[in-house]
Amino acid sequence: MGVKTSVWVNYMSERLPGELSPDEVMNEILNRMISCYQAGDVSVMPGCRNKYKLGLASGSPRQLVEAALTGANWSHFFCGSSVER
Image (tube, rainbow, N blue to C red):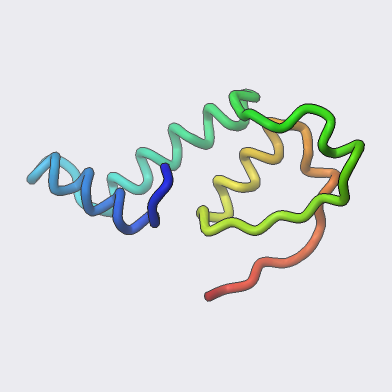
């Protein structure tokens, strides 16, 4: 979404006063994004895996990154660990 997770969660929660808590907003949005990503609705740069060594750094929640890699059928290109901030 282009901004820190906490920023958009708070924004959406404020737009829906009393309807959803920040945790509910986070869960709902992540679940919808994960469903789209796992279904393959993920854009990747064609041909880049054949031309370049791949690395991945993201500030997104880990489950979203994993869903995107699965949906793009790229999970097997990556192994490694998560670094907490």
